[in-house]
Image (cartoon, rainbow, N blue to C red; front, side, top):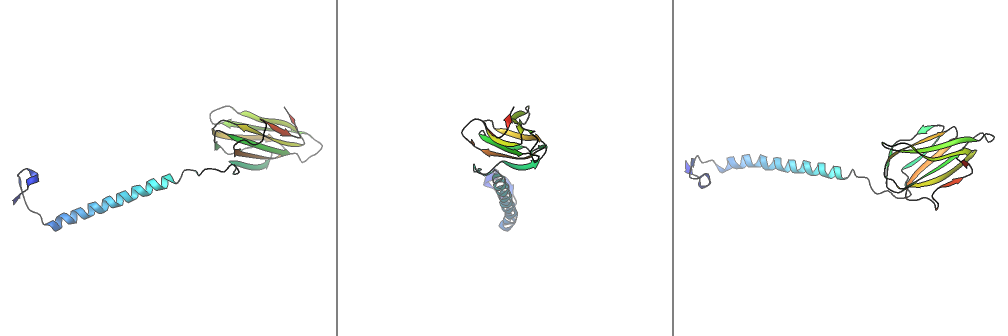
Length: 162
């Protein structure tokens, strides 16, 4: 037995240095594996952030016929919704209504038009997660893009807004 100065003069049995290395190597290897796993986890979570969206890339771009509620979408603080509708029966004017609902809030009417067809756009300045609902028997297209689309606060064409 030898005196270990770090143990305060307590006599401890000597251990061969190869034993210490054998126990130290797995610990160091374990630390390397742990650090490697943490780095992989951190780097993969940082790549899940959405890339910046170009103003020309729509958040929503959907067409259909008849009533439909569109999937919820997270929108920035400045975005514009654009719509068009076209009724196949040219002799009967039909209603078209588009609403936007922010999560946890009441629906807001984006437009309510009656006609053979028409369309328009409306900019918004509210960030959040929104769903859009179309109520009509006509064919329609709805698009939502970031930024302001157009030069007036609301634009409509070829239909009566109510």
